[in-house]
Length: 252
Image (cartoon, rainbow, N blue to C red; front, side, top):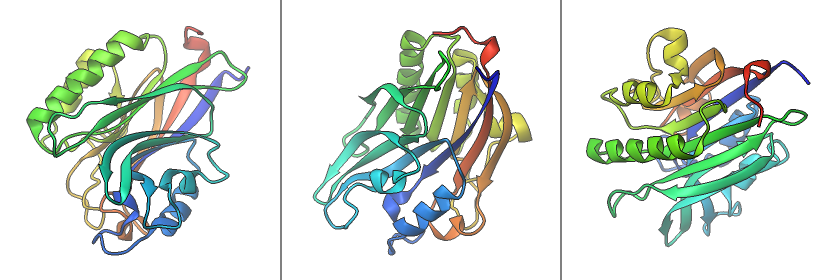
């Protein structure tokens, strides 16, 4: 059994496969850009699970292709065109997954996708959570409470955890609560002492996208805001490289 495993995690609000202006379909370019990152895990927000107006009816399956053989999808919002939500693409097999409705109003349908993956040739399970929080602070606070309650209830503290997504937290109020309640670290803060600027992608100012983790050493974290990312979604992608020390874990 290897003593150390590196996991590259990418979080990306992909804007339903549309360009920064929302006028051009750039799904094929997104697929190329995401594949070139060589991530082991991809946390996607605003991904279409069914698109009746495209030859690629499931965007997350099109993106996964032959690279990520395992994926989970949580449907959050239904429209005449189909439906969309969050997805996790993984090079590791899923043991289980569940999409939990954390909506707080009828206009913002939100879900928390919670998956558990198995690291092959080891007894290790890693918990993954992908989410996209409300635009309004009151709703975000309720959603953070729900996420923390679920993690405290179903995720053993000695099992590795990664939380990726678009937190819409431009006032930077969420991290301290997560540090205290869950014992997580935010990857970019851990490396650079500040959250990553990810929105808008062509000139990132707001620090909306995050990767939190526990049970890992953080080796790298960056906002991918250069080309080609700045002409794709309105969010920059966020990459974190994490090191899992298996010998220090309580095996499941």
